[in-house]
Image (tube, rainbow, N blue to C red; front, side, top):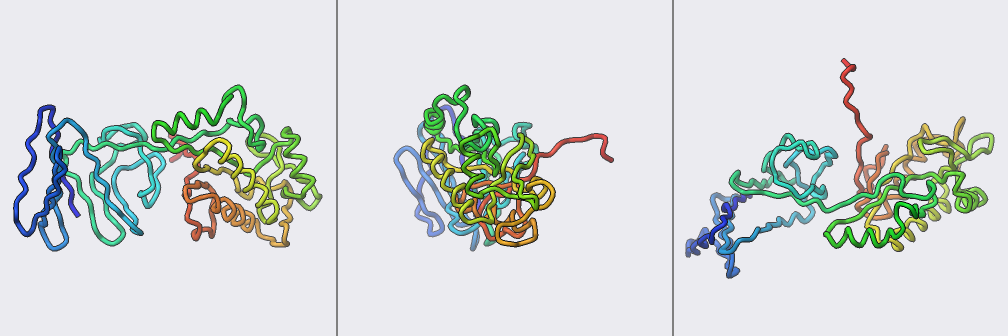
Length: 306
């Protein structure tokens, strides 16, 4: 399917004339008009015109289909139908590394959408993430009062601008989060090693790591996040961690006797996937069946590597 739009003008622009050709279909909405004409057996040309100074938004219903194409992005995800872009002109730019782009999209059943170069396209960014260091202590799930004295108010103000809000989460509870850490330790909710130790070192200190192979621990973790989501009107979560190298130091003893460290990772992804379809994770192996986003690890440009 091919789409093209008439270039809007600062002056009033004459509406397209609606004809009676069998190959054309005209939609008249008073101030603007849409003319759809068949150009071949499976190809249509769509023209929008408006008699007032306004932008026109067109949506293509994909149903169960996936879509590919468009612009490159710093956080490239495939397929791209749920990717969110900042609201700016659809031109090559260093913003979000959008240096390569085409106004061309292909759907998974073989249809394509092409927007003529004369159309001043805009992307709309619709998601804001509250990233690392928002907690009073890592794993406590309590907002830092100095940074977010009223997190719900902040989230609601962002949402008034038509943004979704996600928040950064990890599978650790630092030992300084005394109340929460003590509860997890006493309940047997943390990963342990063969010496029956639970503390592990990660990039934000020493912590107990939630043992997602333990159904009760997974349920506890999920319940706390659902409460966080409700309290602060959060839409979804971006999860870090889950890699094998930060499991309780020395040797990992899974809750149910499974010996492979990969079992922990699968249990982690299984748990977080139940928190909604917009969840993001950066760890995966054998978890393709879960319909969530998988992001790449942070990358660096190192010129010394040949």
